[in-house]
Amino acid sequence: MIKAIRGTRDLLPPETALWNFVEAAARDVFRDYNFHEIRTPVFEDTQLFARSVGEETDIVSKEMYTWEDRARGQSEKGQSLTLRPENTAGVVRAYIEHKMWERPGVQKLYYLGPQFRRERPQKGRYRQFYQIGAEVMGPPAAGSESPARDAELLEMLAALLDRLGVDGWKLELNSVGCQHDRAIFEAALRKALKPVVSRMCADCQRRAVTNPLRVFDCKVPEDQPIIAGLPQIADYLDEGCRQHFAEVQALLNELEFPFVLNGRLVRGLDYYTRTAFEFTHEALGAQNAILGGGRYDGLSEALGGPKAPGIGFAIGEDRLVMALEESSGGIVKKPDAYIAPVGAGMNGHAARLARELRRHDLVVELGDESFRLKKSLETASRIGARFAIIVGENEIKADQFALKELSTGQQVAVSRAELVGKIQGS
Ligand code: AMP
Image (cartoon, rainbow, N blue to C red; front, top):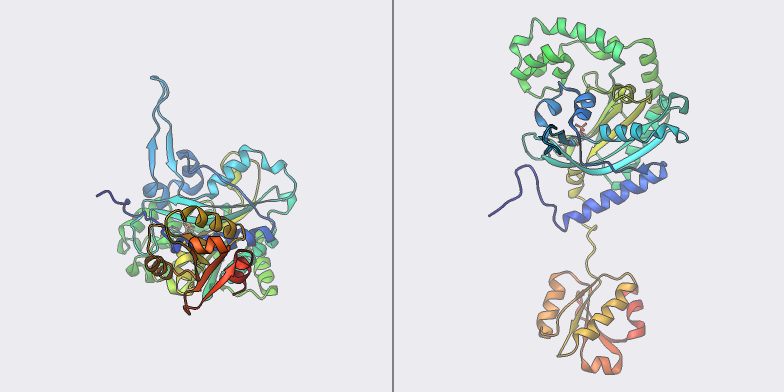
């Protein structure tokens, strides 16, 4: 038997109703904040991720699905392509490619879609997973660097989580400074790591040489006390970054927005600058990060574009749905009516009636004239329909149908004209 690939999964009804609910709420909230949708390809030039996410990150060094495309000519080498492990790089590439900075104001873009990483699958971690994300970017003159953008984005996320009824989330906030601060911090970190690194995990030993900041991504429990003793980036911020971070916090306080500072939060990707954040959720267990994001003021330039500071986030939709699953009883729409054709020649009449009801936005399921009435009524109950409507020869002649409320067993005769009102009014 052929099965879905490890780390991928099928999303089936009724769970898909929850996914649609989440996506519809996200689109609604994004609209209120004047964000617009962008759709970028699922695969891109491998270089895009190497240059933005960073060669030394776990994502680029070991988790990407990369392949060489078939060469077009004999002399040509195939291009290296990669399934996107995240969507910010694609959005920024599109921003540059379509000269979106020529549009007025800042660009506020959102996306929804699958991302791919060859991570070790476990609860809450998949190899094809889904993200809902948004980016705000533009020329500095359009206000893209302002702490007001950071606060607006964070406030939008709270609005979305509230709209979905997710409570128990926590915002962790840090500033990772700019390239200059990072260079000084990195030197201090290397020095601090020297005497302790031999006691750390193999990944950390590698990171300490290639990209010491990534040591903060380590999840190995034995390494945590060592990591807790390392210097923190917050103590290395220059005046501009310190001021920016203070203003973000002041705005959040003004909005009465709860957050905690986490000096060890550095985020997994190289392109982040200044504000970095993560929302966690208590119900999720080990993989408790529901979303993450931050500023990336130099990313556009790193990809050959103009100066275009920006800030964005990505929500892990799989995890958001998991956090919602417990409280989601009422989301799935059950059929309003099940139409039971009784007797030969009734399928057509039943189909016509179904069409009329569906035009009024009712959810209708259809039986078959070959079923006995008992079987139809049982099926109607099993699928959770509220009413069964019996369509037989007598009903057609009288233009009046037997409407049976399945929860009570009560049955009344209702004329065709009154049927919709009767079902909707109940
Ligand atoms: P990142 O792009 O790594 O900053 O991740 C943003 C969010 O996506 C995380 O907070 C998770 O909620 C989610 N996420 C990342 N990787 C996975 C994965 N392999 N499976 C499920 N969700 C993920």
